[in-house]
Image 1 (cartoon, rainbow, N blue to C red):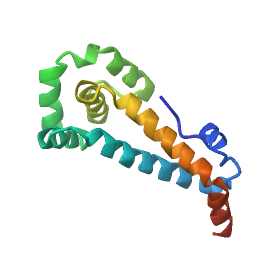
Image 2: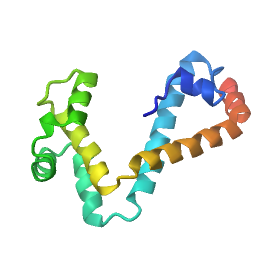
Image 3: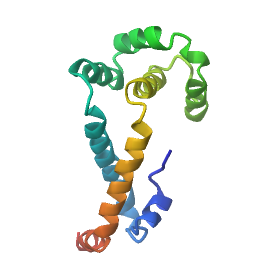
Image 4: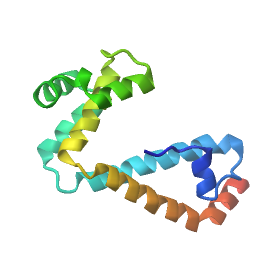
Length: 143
């Protein structure tokens, strides 16, 4: 969907960030994006849904297995699972891969607009950064 990389830094006017600070800045952007998206996606979900999703993203094997057996019992033949496996090069029985797939499918089922939410939050964050590029670069150079 999107990548936080040198092209992203170029897009937001932060390509001049010193190389030794780029990775930390991108990690901060990712954490901020993840937090803001989580807040937006949680709107309208029940406490039970939030608890279930939290267990899935925390890779609780029992919750992941139960959810998949109910909602996507043949997950290993699902096109998304196959693509995720090809990209990650992980074995089909890798618990992290299975949990990542389950979280993706959970979002598709419970928040089918999640891709739109992520794109909107990323766009807001980009505008925020672009509006403060000079200040951010100045503070990084001072540090």
